Length: 266
Image (cartoon, rainbow, N blue to C red; front, side):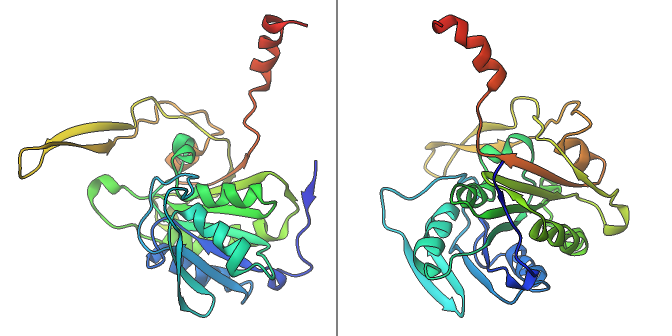
């Protein structure tokens, strides 16, 4: 295994913050506040509007535009992954970040959400570039129409960040962190978890008609976690624990590959 060593001191980190809820979102403001407990070298490069569900997409059919809002603060007309590309190759090119942190997302990113998540996308891109990366999300019951409460992220975020910023880091990996929808007093610890999988049907199109009677569809979110394995991120959040899931870019199904080999010759 190849590992990225931590800096001599946490204050030596050069941190890039990204999200998918926009540069004006409460979550990224809190994340900046928490990261500044460890280092003052903090850059914010985030979309100028919400890009939830953008996943690991990049802009290929239209230009990416950047607007400077202040010192080390830039709004990007593009996807969350575009933000990482612009930061690493243009904005911070003279001294790229030592860590990329995405979030804190307004809502969960668990199980198969990783394949859709605009919060995970920047962490994936950073890992591809050989940079330590973390995705962070605050779970909340969005079905009730209430905004997220970040008290738990505020309370447990510094402890999680301190450990993840100071440990050796396996190249080609990123860490997905979710804070439960619970008060800080209710939190049942911090768990290292595996990626779970919900029952099929979390995202389904629901029809409607606009004012001109033209049909349209809205993607409805309805999670059914089923009976998740006890080591999974889904089980941790169900039990009101903070979930810390190490993920890797190599998605090879190795046991399946072994089963396929006899079918295609020696």
